[in-house]
Amino acid sequence: MRQLASFLLFGFALTAGAAEIWRWKDAEGTWHFSDSPVAGAEKLNVNPPGKSGGSKPAPAPVYSGGPLVLPQEIVPYARCSIVQPVNDASFQWTESIAATVSVEPTLQGSHQVQAVLNGSAVADWPKDSVSHTFTGLFRGSYTLSVKITDQQGNVLCTARAINFHVRQPSVLSPARKPAAR
Image (cartoon, rainbow, N blue to C red; front, side):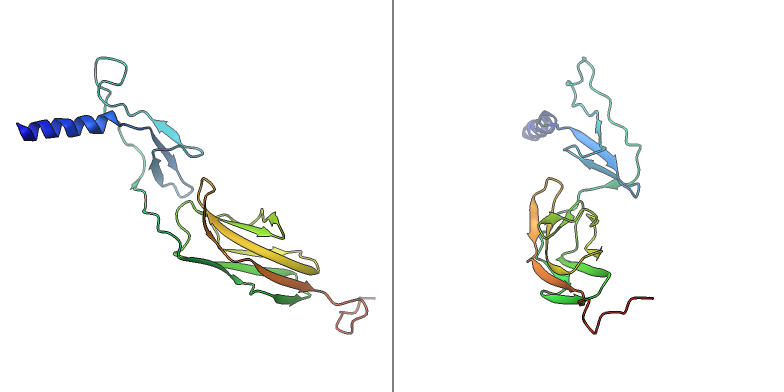
């Protein structure tokens, strides 16, 4: 009798705390499930028995999507740093500068890279990439900072900011390329 009572209490506890279920398909076609909505997600109608508005229990939901993807455990980042360019690097007469961030462990799930160059967000840095190429930087000094955030904007890791410099020869410099005539 005690086992039956425990089983009934356990079953009641599971149905009493039922939450909303959301599902969405990512760019690779994999289905994901969550208890909180994300952009493009659809709410699944999952009602516990007796909560469907009628006297009959709600029918069991039927899964018709792709492979079931269970949420992965999020591991805290041990380290994130800007490895390229190195701090105080100088670039002479260059058209592009590569930037790379090292993240340990690797970038997880929906976490994203947010980069700031001289106080302004780098809009064309891909959110899911740890590298980017800057083009069209004029002569001057630049400060690059990077942080890793989750979907809610919480900062998970911040890399130490670095400085780098772009040099262009003066019009009077012997190193300057001669103009075509």
